[in-house]
Amino acid sequence: MTVVEIIQSMLAPGIMISACGLLLLGMNNKYSQVINRIRILDDEKRRLLSKKRDQKLSEIEESRLSNIDLQLPKLAYRIKLVRNAVVFYSLAVGFFIVSCLFIGFNILNPMFNISNLAIISFLLGMLSVLTGVGYACREVIKGFQIVMIEMNSH
Image 1 (cartoon, rainbow, N blue to C red):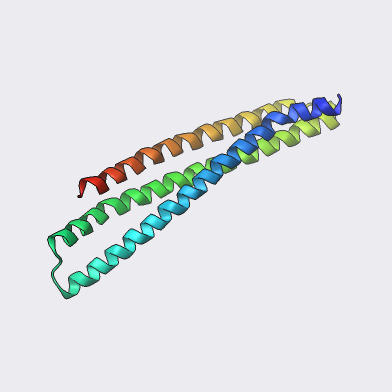
Image 2: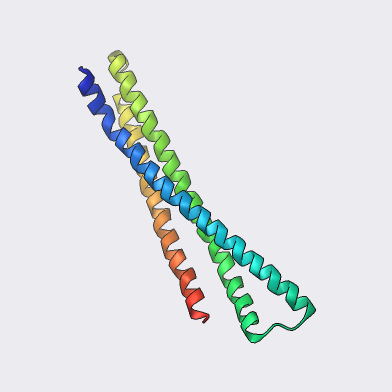
């Protein structure tokens, strides 16, 4: 087997590693944004509750407090979805790396014939990507629901 053939056989897992890297980059960015939103809302809630202890809140402030109470549990659920997507994308990267290693070992020492292990690890990687995409889709839907809560409160 030539060097070109070796590189070609390892190319598909390598491309999938890059693709998962892009997915992870996007999810990590989303993770930071959701965490930041939770912190902002939690801080706003603390200020409103502190004010409520000292004086009566206006109708708008009561409405805002109620709105925050609706959003925070949904954001907590949303951050779990993002976390799960990140975990499965990361698992996929691991499976694709293992797949590349099995392909390389199989090429260097064909008498062990571990090509089936390479295929299985590649398929497990693809399954992990699919699971991560499922969590990412659920997260987008949850994000839309949270935005609708915010919009309906005005």
